[in-house]
Length: 443
Ligand code: FES
Ligand SMILES: [Fe+2]
Image (cartoon, rainbow, N blue to C red; front, side):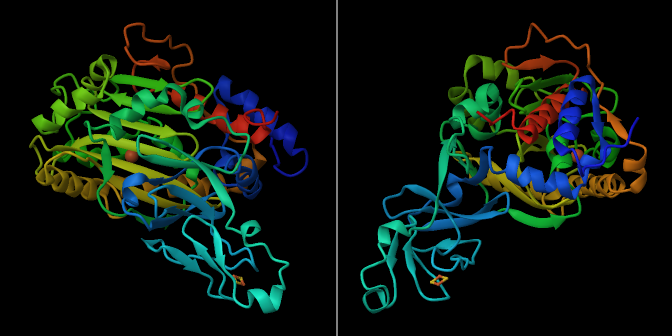
């Protein structure tokens, strides 16, 4: 092993990291490194499609939320005609932040510095002293809020800062097959159950993105209490069963955990199951009926998880779904966003029960969340240690190197079994490396 200082010769270093990933090697320092963080801002978050909001967070005209793509604060608003716009949250006059709230309802935003006024669609419509000050030299139409390109899939609004980025459907590719597990839970689709919980953690966004790309390996250890106390219907001996599915070249991946005695669609009310079966294809029904836990990541930093959980140990419990965003705010520092998703046409009683299970397991106070973050924070701290660079410490990503795709499986992508596997992670890190080296976006 040799040390790989991320200083001089960065392009060469990045190439080397990229070459190591398919062979199952990744340098530990990339989990916490200022230079890597800075490059990610320019080469990943300025180029990829990034999640902004779920349409059901802004159901009424005038509703808005503010979110981030990389280090850029973005207003996502539904205008007075019901259309969704994303705009860079910076006044064009001298750069003040226009909207200071995280969510609300407004037809206009008025700058608190010199008073320029914009419609929620981003159009500049008011400038104090327009006549006397600018004497006809300022054209309002040239000074609207900077627009951000958006596209949606199944209620998810994504934005990209790259005008040349491929269409969102190409970016997601065949991963939409698996996304429907979380987003098309019935004919009416899924909706958020309340605003997201969000908080700052001492971990790197990539550790979370990798974990949710299907790390079934950690579950029986890190979340052992769930098995032992009977909150979670799986066991250490069967937990590796299932599939790891990834979309080669795209970076997206999902782990599909299977429990031999877990009845198809257990934990959903009958009417929700009937509605889901109408919304899904035959292949999706075949795949999803075998899944106890689905946990996946859309590259770069959006994840989903659906699992059964019981408020009463030993009882069957219900299924809940969480959607999560890992917003990087520094090397080894992430702002986590966590939502509960529910089927829109489900009975309210089920929605509330699913939300209770979700809050017990995930979001800031959730038990599973705390198990994960305690480990991720220590991983992040270790990655910064001088010995990591001095000895060129690498991690082994070598599980399932020889795995052949499962020919029986009805879903798309590269699908291997068992569920406990590094295949999805090699795919994720390869995509990350392709963005850092520019292979994913340079012409
Ligand atoms: S900075 Fe917004 S009006 Fe001057
Ligand atoms: Fe976990």
